[in-house]
Image (cartoon, rainbow, N blue to C red):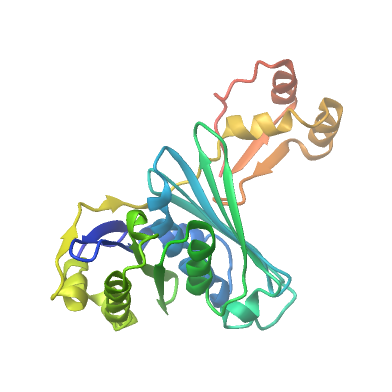
Length: 300
């Protein structure tokens, strides 16, 4: 079975409902194990990664979508970003003074908000915000679609952290097609609810042990399902030495040179992939003269 790290799209032709199924393995490791995250944070990031992969279907153009939670509880901040090319990255911040973290989503993030940001390569950025007032991330996402898109949506998220240093995540999304969203036909509502109930019968063990084709057959063998070619998902970070240099242009040159004198270099560390970029006094002069060359190698 080689269908992990893929996003599968499918349609229910007789119900006019679309679906997605994503399963993450290798693409998740650099996110979850890039830092010494407690298992509770690993689970949160894993769920968010699966959910964000499902959300890439919103993108009808080249760009990026990010799913971010902010709160005042044990978890302060967590974000997963995915591109239209299905690359993935993410990071979390939590109260590291706590010896024990809450296990459930609603206990981890108190007085929180869910922020979904869509950033096209060309055009204006869109941001939607909803309160984290439901017990799970999946239910909060369903609330987001009900509020901002007026689309009946079901989200199911799965995680497997049974193997140390090897997290897996998965998700299923079902959604009424946009052309049907304003149609109040009772039969169509019944069709969607029927498909939701079928989807809810899938166990976590089945999600991670069955192939995608077997999973869809297990759930919907009495339905007319059209499955499309999958797209690959992989971890990738958009940081670069040039982007770091551009950020340093906003800092006074004298301040940067003082840092170089005291510490030997200005160091910029990517919060997502933890790559470190170093800039010496020659780099600082070039940055502020507008003639910076990215040629110098990066350091891990």
